[in-house]
Length: 216
Image (cartoon, rainbow, N blue to C red; front, top):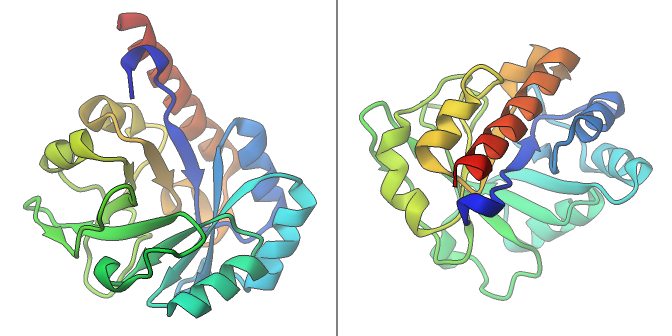
């Protein structure tokens, strides 16, 4: 992505309520994330997610799931009205090359910068999140962004892990990722978004993008 045309994709994840999804879009978020297959306090039935997405007209929804089969993933995504999927604990090499929806494969990054998981082949999106035992995201903790510089310069990366309005600009300045993804740090309680935190997060991304464009 050229600095002169910089526009970071913003994903607000872990949505469970229509009002939170609508507010995220109003603030300028690009993608809405719904956790439809995982043991998470932010999980939502795919049919409930689908009702929210349908009511918002044209929103780009991402169905987040842990260890689905390809057939299960497609069925869940369709029920949720999602046009993209995000996969955790799935081997990219075992995933069908002709799967009909764009996929992001989640990888964990530990405190020492080590990657945990299998890199998918290009052009699949890589989602980098903080590695924590027993968790597939939603940790509320960051990882050393510098550790992912080489990866982010080589392919599209969605950066997650402890992001909020206070630190997302620094993360973008460090990695220049394709996108940023926030969930737990935007909440007042699990699954319930705090409107001001969502607004600050999206605004911080857009302001950072503008600074990068102006300096290019």
